[in-house]
Image 1 (tube, rainbow, N blue to C red):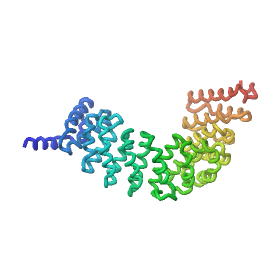
Image 2: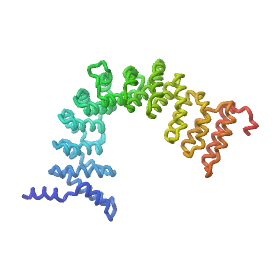
Image 3: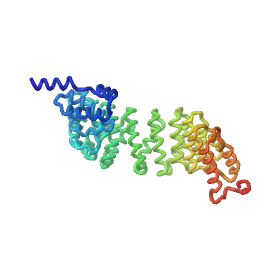
Image 4: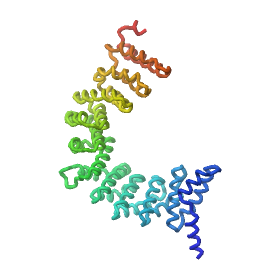
Length: 418
């Protein structure tokens, strides 16, 4: 009877998360004092034998964790909730673990068996919980113990699970690099249209492209073999997000494989000219500027398209165009000389960020032939209304730097300058 009374009182008198939030908002005394009081109650409730009370306490512990208070006192109890057979409780437990656990959490070794069990669950969403947890709080030990289970899920009948398995492998590779070599062929097969293990689901293929591109970004030379499947995808993929990833990775590959730039002329040029997505067009331009600067036909086309970005009324696109220009200027400043007037016009922009970027570009495209007209134009735009002393000083400093380039070699008329 006494036990039943105690359990009933725990259920009846426990404050829900919503009640705790209301209590904090209406508190007349120090909020920190109220939080400390609520945490003390939560610490007692989280050890309750009544599962619903424990789950509510876990939710409150997560909330306090998001406010900056440690939830280490409930780590073991969170694992207990993760192991609950109730789907709703299990979801709360996994959410709590992903938010409050760190690689240094003491109870992480207890997770391996639980994750292994849920990875083999018949419920695809429970498998998804486990994969998301691995992506969030994986350690070297967890990665080593579970990599085989995750790789086996690459053939799962549900595309939801296959996609999450692919994405969680990136975190596993990061924590346990030894897993990459034996697993890499399995991932590459997902993109091979001639392989029996090819995955036709766009979401799964997109996930594979995503992690392979991230791996290639870190070490392009080791992943040049991806150029073949990625090249064929340039003309077949309809997802702009996937296209952006592929185009980016070709920008990383091109400096390591000189022949690649010539092969990419047609598909990259087609994308730049035909796509209606500014995001894809911009990434193509950026890849040309960063990695294909030695391919004349592409750099010329990219320079022409950059001009359209800079002339756009949208301030964001204008800045992106200027940023791409500054990247291209490092290798091909001569290509941008013809666009001097477009850049000069940006010095009149109301956005100070755009003006500063334009000033930076002008500094790099000044020649003996245009130095006088360029400096005169810069000085004309030095004065703004209302007055902006910081901008005026910046323009003057840039003019001095331009004139002093290579010991004044650009200047032919010192009387004009002084």
